[in-house]
Length: 450
Image (cartoon, rainbow, N blue to C red; front, side, top):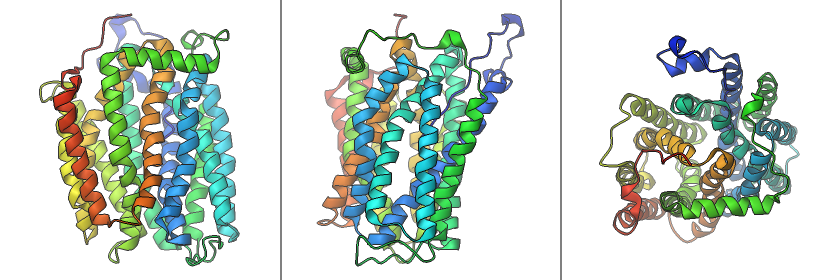
């Protein structure tokens, strides 16, 4: 969730330029510092992604409480991420990213210490979750905005492929390692009858997961300090313009761009009706099914990460594979993903859930690099921070808010019904977008230079 991007190397002489743009990127020591730290940081994220919902479910067994924790992370992130994007456009993305790393290091170290000491209570979980949400509201746009500022436009596709590929590798390895860690060292014998009871005794696995994420922040802050940014690529200062006015300016620009507006609205609908329920349903499925557990939860999430990584590799090998246009391909893949989501609530074995999540990840990963690059190429450089913060707001702000609502809804419906409804809704949304919107006409081609 904290993507960090490479420094722009001095442009090589055309005659000496390597044929493979990825080779040129890896020759830059700043890129190596950035990607190594980014890899460790994102790997640590996956440990918290598994440990936090598992901690809450062990403490309370209540999906409503889990939804509340997710809301405390997502609401401040959703409220401030656009402001974070505006600040990144006015200041150094590296500086903003460094500050948020130190903040998250402290928050996760405190969380790990409280879990291992057996003194963590639910109100502490709420407070620390709120702090993490506020920090990510600024770290996410800072990380995603760095790429176009430090990499030549001709290298964006290769740089995005490497960065997103590493992210997906961590999404494969991290959940597997986190689930194994919790299964081996214990998830804790939290008292489920009293929501405010401390999570103590045998909570070593969860505490170590948070501690490893805190360590990843420390190491990635050190590697980020080694990166020498190019002064010529820094965003120009915009002191005369207020931050809120800067946010409004970006929103107006994106709304006037018909294709951007269509895609952002479509993705918002998916985040609200699909991604939110999935965020809370998968851990509940693993914790409530006798044949599953923490290791199975990690395996299913890891399978999704592995599938996404394979999809990105396939996209690199077959970059022109489309069902008509870019928009048509997105809609077709989303409809297939919706169908695959429907039977998730019926699984009784780990391999069934892992197989479904693997294929879902494969389809989603195939499109990610193209979509990411399409946005960066379409938006003027001065608006990159705000564009990427809006994109991240959709999937990292709206989706967890929807997950919080889902926690309340699950008091009335079953997991089987939730997965079936979510998958069916995705199919319907894709069909409506095909019929009623210009989504099917969105192409890979970048607009004329503005």
